Length: 300
Ligand SMILES: *Cc1c(COP(=O)(O)O)cnc(C)c1O
Image 1 (spheres, rainbow, N blue to C red):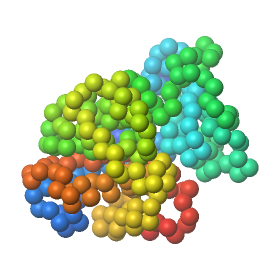
Image 2: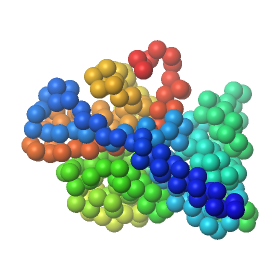
Image 3: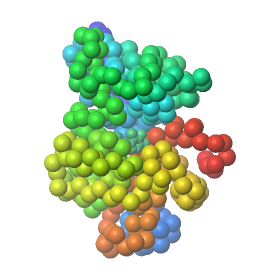
Image 4: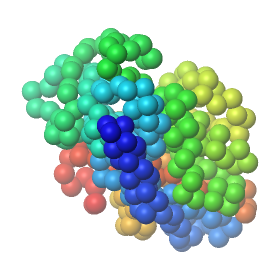
């Protein structure tokens, strides 16, 4: 019974994905090129908490956990982690318990992300260094989802984002890169597209970690768009996010999708894309992370 209801919950989230996710075309006037088409896959519309790529990266792990009769999901992340709060929501939907290992000391005041995770029933534990190894189950009840959903099952799920779009219509697919799991999955699901990742932090081994998930040769990483580093921002980035919202009506987050869209605009202006290119940018969600910003910084 337990597992039947869990499967139903995942099917429900999949159905919701089909209903909510849509494609939007950015008007040429925003980027001043009529020979390039720029579309956005709005997976951020899936759910305010379990948004974008996080649901997709989680789903095959959750199925695996249910099939193997685990009752608790164990995963880790930082205080503003989209992955933590998405896992809290998805595990609860599947009637699984969830435990989040949070990097760092327990703060005096929990971040909104952690408050939300806790209110979704996730048990939080704080460690200065993550003490469990991915793939090593500490108890028979517990099922580990690697931080950020990194792994084959995560990549496979991320590839399912392209079930909501005709990938063959595009020459280039672009996404933000944290662990690279999403990029690996997209490259596998769209072998005929050039799939370009925009890393949001400086991390030398990222190329190798992505190759371990996907040996595909249709992957390109462009490393010049960190905008100060992970979860950091520049005034230019903030201005871009506001301009982008005013012009397109599309909100972005400052950790991932803001940097991605800003990178795409700069690449278009640098003539990176040949005439006739048809670009698909993945809006991978993450908007809850903007709650960590000072009020009034963003116009949305
Ligand atoms: C986690 C996250 C990413 C990074 O995905 P990876 O698979 O870890 O590379 C990108 N965008 C958003 C909004 C995210 O929350």
